[in-house]
Length: 424
View 1 (tube, rainbow, N blue to C red):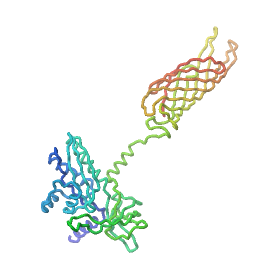
View 2 (view 1 turned 135 degrees about the vertical axis):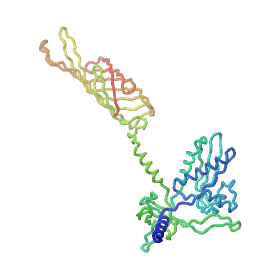
View 3 (view 1 turned 180 degrees about the vertical axis):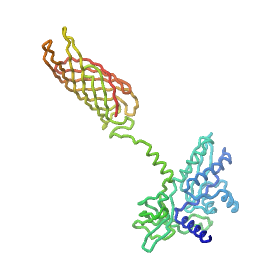
View 4 (view 1 turned 30 degrees about the horizontal axis):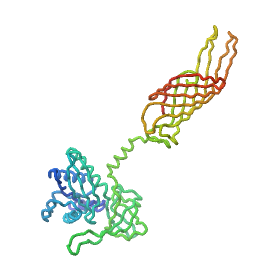
C-alpha cells in the first residue's frame, strides 16, 4: 500500500513538473467609485475571479486566502488601484500577476476598469475597460473582460532537461496547442531589484536569452526546442514563452463555426454586394427578333458606379401564318445575334429593379415552305439586323421593347415581349 501511494505521489509530481507554467494570479476587490454599491463591486470581483478560473490559463489564488494574508500583514487595500501599490500587494501575496481596478457608474451603465500588473517586472501588462448596459448585463460583460485579459497573456514554461548530447526539453507541449516550428522566447529571471534608500521592491531583472524553435514533441506536455543562432547558453529553469493560442474548446468551436459558413463567391473586380455568378440565362417570348433564349456573361473588371456591362448571345424563332387571298402561308422567322448590354444598378444597391439597355447585332432569316396548291416553291431571304432594346422589370421578370432595323429593308419594325431570367 505504501509503494502504491508513493507511486501516485511521484506521478502527480512528474505531471506537475511537465506541464506549462501557469501564472500565480490574484484578483483584488475592485474599488467602488461614487454611485456604485460596494456589494456590486464585490460581486463583480467574484465573477471575474470565477471566469478566470474557468479559462484555466492562470493559477488563481483563493479570495479567502487573500483576505487572510492581508489581515496578517495589516495591509489596507482601499484605494490600491495603481501600479506601485499593485506590485507591493503582489509581493505580499507571492503572486506573479495581480489584477486591480475599479467600477464606476454612468447613468444606468457600469464601467469596469482593470489593470493587469506583472509583479516581477513591476509593469502594467494590460489596461482594459468594459461597459455593461445595466446590472442584468454584468455577467456577460465580466465574461468578456476575462477573455480579453487571457488573450493578452503568453503561455509560459521553463527548461526541464538538457541532455549530454545537447537535446533541450521544455514543458510546453501539444496539450498547450503548441505547433512544430513555433518560435518561443527565452528569458532568465535575474537578481531582485530593491531601492537602497526605501527598501521598496522595484522588480526583477529579466535577461533576454534569444529565441528557440519547437522541432519535436515528446508526449503532450514536453517539446524539444532548438535555440536560434545567436541565442545565449541555456540552463534548467530558464523561462520559455509562446504567444497564447485559444483554448482547445474555443479553437474547435471556431473551426466548426468556420466550416458552417459558406464561402462567398468572388469575381475579380466585382464588389461583394453585386451578386454571385456573372452568368445569366434568360427566356423571352414576343414577336420577331424577341422570342428566344439568351445567355449573358457580365463583365466586372471595371465596374462603374451606376452599373455594369455584359456580353451575350441570343437565338430567336418566330412562327406566323399570313393570309394571301384565299391561301394561308406558314412563315418561319429565325434570328441569331450577339449583344452588348448595360445594367443600370448602383454598385452597393440590392434593388430588384431591372433597367437594361441592349444593342443586338446579327442575322435574320425568313423562310416560306413550298406550297403546291399555289405553285409556290420553297423560298428564303436573309438580312443583317441591328436592334436597340430596353428592358424594364422587377426581380426576374421584365418587359422588352425592341426596334429592329433590317439592313435590306431599313424601315424599323417595333416589337414587344416578355422575359424571365436567372443568375447562376
